[in-house]
Image 1 (cartoon, rainbow, N blue to C red):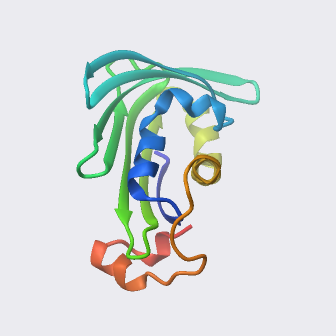
Image 2 (cartoon, helix red, strand yellow):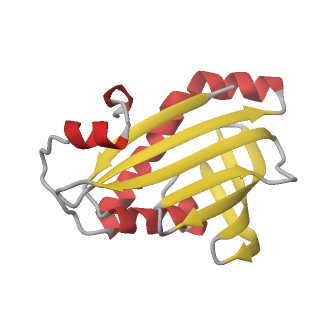
Length: 171
């Protein structure tokens, strides 16, 4: 099962990054792998289901996910919806932590298993790179739409330890 855990400092306020990630219907505008995405069922102000079309070369798959957003905690969790297409299991979490200079530490975990073995093998081979590319896409989008905050060079090792996050996860 492909799994990755990434931590990255981004020079944007955590609340603004949270809003960017929570706005799922705009993903096709800046994430190359997602060709379409729409909210299919709004369950509450903080919970909904969405359907995404993910395309890579000759492969295109549709899957549904269940999204919970917690603005107070600055956390977003994504799991597979009941009818999720090619996805057998999905756990994706985003946490946004404020750093002392006003920037954010973004903690992302993705753990996915596909129903089709060939798709699983293809995904496993490219998973870490694709995950990094998606985080890069969010950071580029943040630079385009959100004011930059914090220092260009900022050492936050102590803050990382306080949050219980490992430095080896940094990308």
